[in-house]
Length: 117
Image (tube, rainbow, N blue to C red):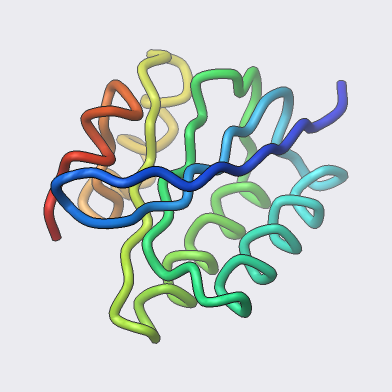
């Protein structure tokens, strides 16, 4: 399966956010596409990101690495990276790797956009 990406800017109580909607599989083959998108957004000055993973069917360690790398990039600019995920099989990966302590994980995009840092 392929990876689909789209971005949009939204404003909320927490300020302006860039939402990255991700669909498909984030694996060793598709993760570079997500990495490029995150790097491009940060280079363009988007430091508060919401990665909407509701459409993600599969996530491997390469994908986790890309998300951690994205978090490091935005934090270098005092930004934030929030995840939106409500699929138990994907959430389980974050729990097993203890990344639930690293990433704020929300159940909806509206909730993530409304969150303050």
